[in-house]
Image (cartoon, rainbow, N blue to C red):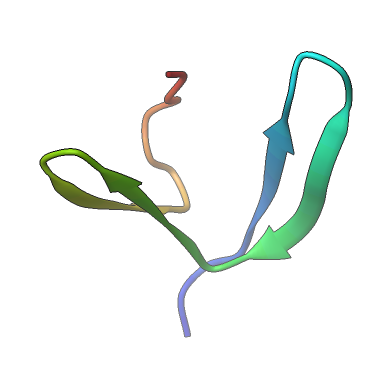
Length: 44
């Protein structure tokens, strides 16, 4: 099983999601990106 980490999705107004996850799939214009534990921080 993959290592879990705390995922937080934040808008300028408030915290939308805060939960333990094993991975997060982020859709983008050029494809998807999967983020797992120990991944470099990402902000877009």
